[in-house]
Figure 1 (cartoon, rainbow, N blue to C red):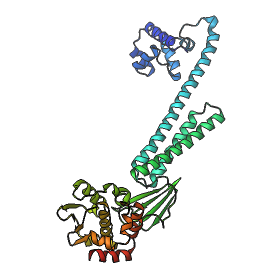
Figure 2 (cartoon, one colour; figure 1 turned 90 degrees about the horizontal axis):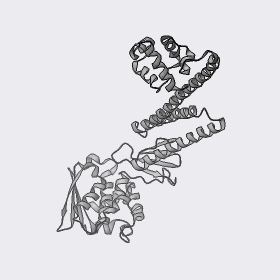
Figure 3 (cartoon, rainbow, N blue to C red; figure 1 turned 90 degrees about the vertical axis):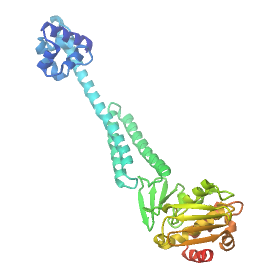
Figure 4 (tube, rainbow, N blue to C red; figure 1 turned 135 degrees about the vertical axis):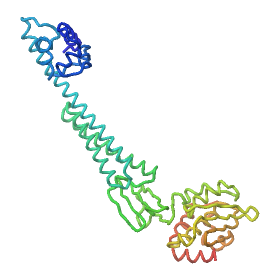
Length: 382
């Protein structure tokens, strides 16, 4: 059907009836803007409006759909042509409507998935549920969009979309786990064990240590080389305080306030706040923590932290000779000479500058050994 030709014919017959666009619009129950669009050839009247429109203009449906007065000898021929054109036009409109609905389903499903991953916490099952729900909705939309294709091609497109969508979810989830340090949304298993949660996700495992505490940290095991018995577990935030992070503060001299401050703020106990000063004459560090020591000393946390901090500071700042740790209730002092003499394998930790593997073997792995902590703390601090 020729929209422009039909539009001009509508305008011509409206004017013959001495009607304005507003008057014609009122008679058939549409807006004057709709009449204007018809007459400009931008849109075709809805099929349900063809009969009332032709009656108001005193023309036949055949004339209206032809865009001109049909001669009697061509009437039957034109009628058949217009019926076919109308059916084709109707089918086209239905297909466009279905495509619009299908596209809307795809967009809604994708937005639902994105929203679910943005709103719900990573360890909430609702985030995964709504993400999968969004995937199903978008998959239905894709299936409807591909209705016009042959079965094999349609099956290939739909299957490919589903696979790509699922892979994209897993990749986005993994990127979030690595960059934001959060629990995986699409883990198929969650195992609790004292202060640890193990998440088993496709292709990798995640260990959430000290969960729901100030010292929570994550270990992402892409090689699946750890178990709950072998995973490095310490009572502080290993991402912040581990040697992989604090080694960047290695310095020959105490007195670089920025470096010293960054190191102290990365070590255990910094989560409670601190200030420090430097004894330049005697090469010492005085650290004042904003908390009482006994208040936070569940499971010897203070003793573990002070041993870890002391060995770390003496290993990373070459000329520090002593450290004073001051709490609201008590003070602790430790000297480099005592650590060098009494801390087991201190020389192995500091061979060739600092050995990160030995640091983890002889310091980090010892932090959870209660007997070792009691013994060495009494030797170094008492």
